[in-house]
Amino acid sequence: MAAFSRHVETASRKPLRAVKLPPSGFADTWENKPKASVEIGLRLLSEADLAGARAVGVQQANALHPELDERSDIWVEAFNQTLMHYAIALGTCQPDHVEQPFWEMAEDVVPLALSEGGMLRLWSELELLTLIESSVTPEIDEDGLARLVELLQAGGAWEGKSVTQKRRLGRLLTYALELAEPAVELAVERTGG
Image (tube, rainbow, N blue to C red):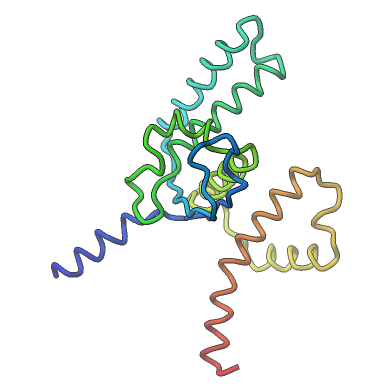
């Protein structure tokens, strides 16, 4: 029983997802920029984490642009960037332990360490993790799956979409493919194919 408890305890400490961030995901000006890809764990953010991130975003946007407010694109950009930095700081962890932050003093390090591309990649991964782990996100049924296959085969899944929507769809489909492929390989091994 003790061995089982240790196994459960160890397994529960691994993050739900980990991503590899290439060196280009880090700022050239950061003195600790890695020379090879780095695995970064991701953890779900609590409502309190997100509320804190929003509060810090407002505070920073007001400090940077005291003459502006949320009606200004410049103010909104400052808010969004700070929100993303703060969320990434709280939402990243060691790839083998969800309770250990990836960076010490992450709120200060993230804006210095990441390139814009690295920040956007980690933000997208946190959004994806939140979506796929949410119990309120509906799961696709057989009819939906058939429609998706038809749209993908005909190229209709991409029609009329903005660049941002196409990227989101591409990331979701890449993740779906990553999840689906091991099952296919396992089925082939079982059938001897």
